[in-house]
Length: 254
Image 1 (tube, rainbow, N blue to C red):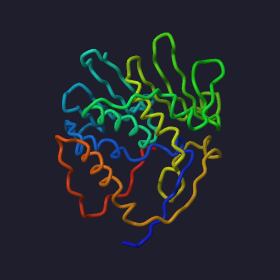
Image 2 (cartoon, helix red, strand yellow):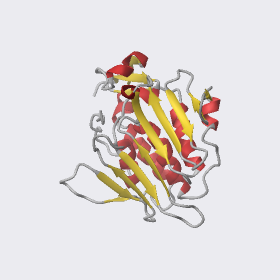
Image 3 (cartoon, rainbow, N blue to C red):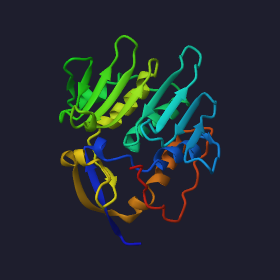
């Protein structure tokens, strides 16, 4: 294996494309104890939390959100759901799922979903209750009447300008949404393959992609390191041993 490997570093991160779904599914299963069914005839993944109250579905159907997470009522916490389109970067979705699995081991940190955005200089939106990113591409909208919150990434206001969107239903815990908005507002570029990006043509002029040489071990084992990090915070799930062989090349949803 060479000492360094060329990768693409993409910013803003919300235009980096979906990334490798294993970034979410593998840690949920191996580090957090989520169980999965097996249907070799269907290109989908269904994961259930250890307490069977949360179900995550990855179902690549055209025209519908690929990621859907539903959580049943738990004590005084009402049922809630979240959905993410195919081009939502997995690293941003992971901000939400990581906050959820952390909450399974104890109370999570309290935070308003807007706090990470305001700290990153997002501004009040015009015409609705929400915030807009400094580059005016990312928007957060809050329905004050029924409590839903939506995130839209769009490079123009016409229908073809929508890149992806995420939706959080009423009663979704605020600190979980804050985990998502924290990852959304993070200005750290996301690593993608060194070849031309699989991103919509209408957003390419808004993307900055820099080529960088990074240590080969950082390319080969980021998923394994992520699994170990999440497993270490799960008292009931011992951290799995790192695999010694190289991980397969990242796969992108689009």
